[in-house]
Length: 330
Image 1 (cartoon, rainbow, N blue to C red):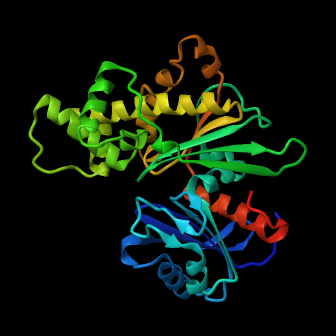
Image 2: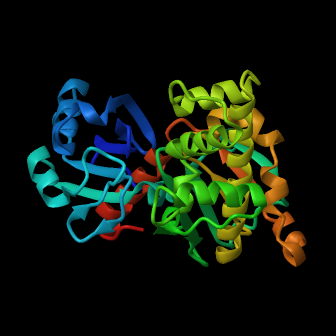
């Protein structure tokens, strides 16, 4: 990537935390800082506070990866306290000359070619065909999805962000149908994100407790559910994780079939890297290939878990560099 307009600001903003970094040269990040979104009334105030405290107040170019579809001038960050932020007003209030926004999984998709191989954990399939589409899925505060395409004659990439987390949850077993019924009693539409997310872990846990009748004295945090599950300290937490991994397997295979992702199926988000050993041994891959006559087709697709601390920053960097030098967002 051309080295221009440094230092620059890049970010990976989730529903709970905002991760900021200063890019001093291509993909060289310093002053990586995590801020709690709820501690700042606006996104612009968080940016301004970070730049001032980082010692780089002169930064004028930024790329922000956000948990929102990019529609006109408004960010619809439904899982964030910065819901319905104005992009143009944020740029003005933060005092930036150029500011681009990307859906967080748009940025994650663009990061894939730049992630070192040591930060990828392969859990199935043949070797990736880099000329073929790549799909990305990841549960965290919400559920993100995207597709990445490579230019046929150059090393340029183009990402297609999606709101696949809003697609309808489809049960693949009687137990999952019971989960759907529990969720449907509470929500008019049961999206797959209702189960494949941090709040989804809590919903599955609550549904299992309701069915098996142990009292819930206090709702566990998602991190508590995962910890008690992977350490086998709570049977219902372990059941919750098992359902979670199976449902992710089905959902990932649906996306892989839709996009024919022989370039690789990449799993990101905040949850799976935290339970990686458990996940690798789970029923995820068995459910991923459970497509009847298409079992062999799915079994060939390479699957990787992203084990990089800040991958979306790599994608934000690529997008910002392309925007500043070629005047489009890839």
